[in-house]
Image (cartoon, rainbow, N blue to C red; front, side):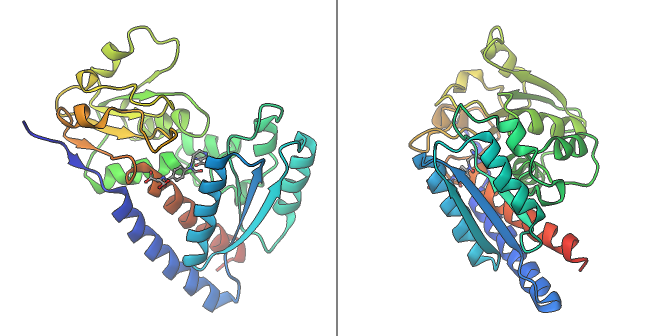
Length: 282
Ligand SMILES: Nc1nc2c(c(=O)[nH]1)N[C@@H](CN(C=O)c1ccc(C(=O)N[C@@H](CCC(=O)O)C(=O)O)cc1)CN2
């Protein structure tokens, strides 16, 4: 039985980060300014702590300064907005990352909107979403941006393909669907109210699983030869796709770990250096 080829996010991310480090060094040499990414974390959710730490460590290795703001779990929306407004106005900060999720008492949309669009290197503001949807310059949401880069790397042209996105979150499902649409795919979104999910997924030439339900998508749901992108983040590094059975049917598949995750951080770093380049006028 043939097995799908793996889409190696770790290797591609490493190349993007190496390239980003060169761009950061060049910018610092020309302007005397090192790109700076501010990370903001509300509370101490263990997964979020890990992700933010990974972002900080990889930033430093790429020559990007990292400034971290740790806020207590009881921080109010108004206090969070105050912090983000301050970072948005600080000329030494070029990019802002507000880790998601933040706790149910926080109005996440209001918080994201306090990030200045030119510093929105995580692509979470309405301005970034609109620009991305219309194919205008701006910063893509990082995981969707990373997914599109992976598809390009493996010569997957979405044009004319049937793409099914499972999940409709603001930072993942919705934007990846818009990016696929922008590349002329025929896009269907699935969610918790979708009737007969398996039947819809079985129609897909490209499946993006982005729902946060471990192994929800199984091999029998995959059309033979489809491209399968697993963007699920679940505890224990388990994806939304049942990897072994899906690999028997797909032509290309992302592993978890080592697929979409590393591309998320590489995209964040690349967009931070791009933001710093624009802000310094270099
Ligand atoms: N503001 C944001 N919040 C969240 C985002 C985001 O892009 N912006 N994405 C996810 C989580 N996430 C980054 O924040 C993230 C998750 C996983 C990885 C990753 O590289 N995972 C590795 C495995 C890591 C390990 O060994 O534990 C992999 O898949 O290979 C990076 C980023 C939710 N929140």
